[in-house]
Length: 530
Image (cartoon, rainbow, N blue to C red):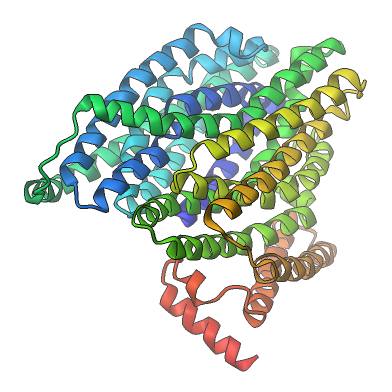
């Protein structure tokens, strides 16, 4: 699932490059504003469904109550149909209130149907995750993103071609709307795939239900109450955790309008922020995947009182996540300019996006860790703790942002830096607060040296080698993409060799990965030689 999450984000990043070339920085800015508003509505209506449903169903599967698990699945499906329909309708008719940019409001309306499809897809993903199988979710994610990429590019090309070249703003809005429609087509393809997989497994599901001898059968009234009680904290936590992006966006728009910037100028600045943000979120996919995979197991272990297994799972997940997140952050910082030159070569925002990406890089580690610790708290029944922690972090980062943008008199060219600094501050606060909550609740003590110090030292060496390798190769070859790829390969090899020699990752963590037997054998062989 971690591999699928990263691959999905890579596909998303790669298709955004031709999309931005088609619709321009202005169109990309309109799309980013609309997408962030859509994401918030999605968080409330369906985004938390997989984690919440997997937790509820997993607790019943752990005791062999297959009938009740299936009834919960059906109740969850009805829940998202109702909530998704209401949320989609609200987005379509109140788009102007959700975004204060006219072009973005038009784009947002095309996201409305996707909200309903996403809720249904989320129930299926949560159902399979509860059975501790991530293959279905992983395949559907890759299919969804692949179809989304193809459909978005084709629709953007077609729709921009309907508008004369001189009408730049209208072309930008039309192209961004094509991207919104493409997102919906991608989600629909993932939903159809999950329906087909469920149909193939239906015979086995019915057999398990028939063999279930538990006499007590939950009523749908109890199920709806249970879903609301479990889903609501998940929604509040996830919503508050992510609403900072939308809130920051609203403050940014208001501040820039006060300084006399037109919508097109605000959208262009937002495009630069969006480019840096998209690159920085790719490594975070592994923590999101690790979190989704962690919740059912921790929920089951916690229910039967095995706190030792819970702590062991948390330790392995943190080491595995930091093994990727720390070098990714240093690598992004070292190669930010060639990365953006390859993906987003638009000269208007290239320098700004490069500097913003360097500021955002530490957030990769902080967001990865806070996402994981939030999932641990949710999986062990502390559903309110992430909500409270997120609310505190949100209040403090909002105070910082308003003080800097509204009261501090920051010039428009520096406003994007304040935006990304607020994002990093929020992630840092969430890390601290969630970490304290996990330590108190599970009596968990983090091993800092192996999980953080060793990866950081090796990553610093890797970053320096990759930076030097890129610039040296570029002088010799003069081709950015070739120099970048070779520098990345060299950096990865340096990191892996030293990580194995310093025993950053052992057999326990490698068991999480595909084909782990071969990897474990390789690690043990290199370890003996060193």
